Length: 357
Picture 1 (cartoon, helix red, strand yellow):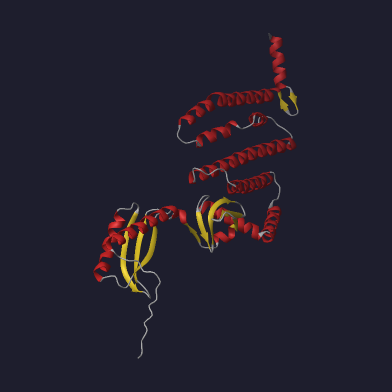
Picture 2 (cartoon, helix red, strand yellow):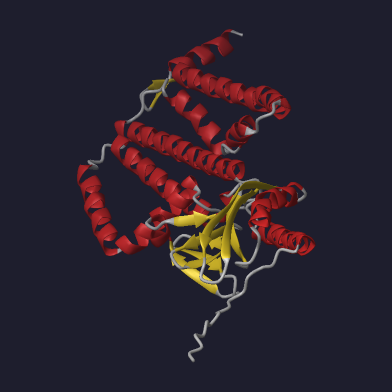
């Protein structure tokens, strides 16, 4: 027994690379305790958090749990190793390498987690804005730009924490960015216009829009161009920059349509019947769904007719609904005028001749 105690005491007092046996035992104990604590966290605590997250209404917590679960085993192992060597006296070079490797691991994982979180938030935003929307090219572009900026920032932070002077590097990147922006300003203009369309949503896929003398249904919103299918069937390609700098009329946003039309009666129509016109039309409009009569006026003496103007609103933005309603109105007017003996005017010319003796 005494021999064992003497051997143990001798081991504890023995020094190797500037550390005693006791120091190595303490470091080993720290490594084991840290490893066990991490194992408990992963197998017990994290599993319980995951079960709790699945019961909540939001899926953000599920995404965060998934990020923690994606941390590689080497990260946990190195954390235990790093904590252990803090209790040992090591060469300054080894200490710098250990610190550098820890910084790289932390920043790499943090950047990866932030990248995944940004992609998740962008995807949720696009789904919230439009339930039918899939991952569009604009979504991928936003995600790509965000990841590039994030990884570039992460790399600069790693280099800065490793003692590298990044001032010149940042200045070079700034000058290079300006040069690239000037060389590709048209492309970048369309790209940022794409982002503007994505977030501001002046129109979406499926909307019927009018831009200048061109019109059609939006079929695709890309990074540089937006493709519109015209009524005749051909495809019109607009530069995104052109759309954000022009007046765009979006007919899908229309909740109701104002319609104005007119008709003319013959000059030999009695005044009594002319006064009946507003009442006749009010009766017609009450029988047609989705329309509200605004006014009916005898407004002008034409060259060959007594002209009336009718204004009404249809509670729909669909062009087909407007045409259906107008057809019903026209047929009802014709029918009502036939019953009342009121004649529609058509272009005529009366020639009066003076017969001389």
